[in-house]
Length: 282
Image (cartoon, rainbow, N blue to C red; front, side, top):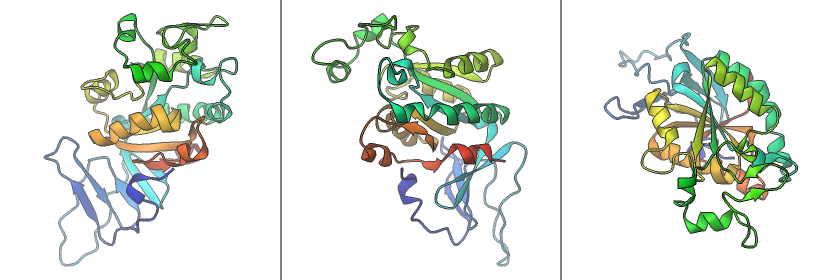
């Protein structure tokens, strides 16, 4: 996976640099020769004076430093950061419905990092397919066809094995896979986890999606991304988030796809980290 605009190949900045402006809705970032990229929007660059070396502001209790690819460290504001977990549902992962070994490998990294993220004050957003009867009539034909096989099945059709109707709200196939479902329920009851329905490949499709509304209402500016499939719903949501001005960080060992390798490697428009670095963040 490639980080934002060739960040791995991009050399470190020579002088402290500020991007954006407090006058814009998306705010500003600062980047430092040390490799620190501060997206917390808590400190502007101080004015230079007499050629004195300018140092990054100290890390405070309200902030977190996350190591990412490209010899960078991204500094985020805890209360403005959310983990977006996409489509880790039975329909995409359950062995009785699909062969998705790389997707199943994402479960363990997620289960290990969720407690750490919650304790850090990061909200957990489970963004999943969950259609209503009304929404069935609004889905475009290209997407309807994509979820059918040989002209059969598709959204709302009854699935075998008691899994319910395909990707409808509250159906068994729409529940999270394995230990993720009880992990969500516990987080929901503790007030750290939130379930957000989507009805397109991107969770941010449309003028004002449920996900976008949640992010705006809660002042979220930085998003960690994980889930399946990397080159489909994860990338669709990530790209839309990037275009809207959110800070995007992909958790690579908690993201997978059934597509050939190239589909996984071409996910872009965000910094890249992994679960080990999330466990080590401070």
